[in-house]
Length: 85
Image 1 (cartoon, rainbow, N blue to C red):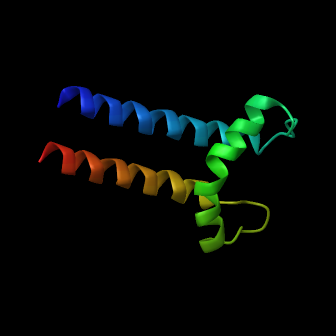
Image 2: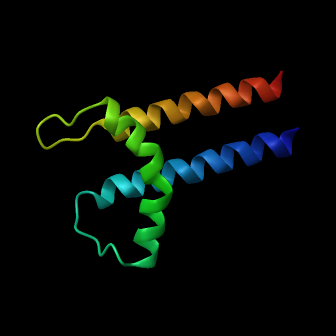
């Protein structure tokens, strides 16, 4: 059981870090053809697009990644709660 909990925690942590790096990259103009950047965009955009459709940008500021990180945290807690039951 501890291994499953550790795996879930690590998987969510990795995805949260990917989202965080994606947010930081939005402040710069990375080369979209760079394999690392392309992988990051392809992995995080489907999840972020859900929130981008629901939360419009405020001026030039896109706050949807903040909501995405928060919901991801809630999903993590829900899954861990179900596993630990």
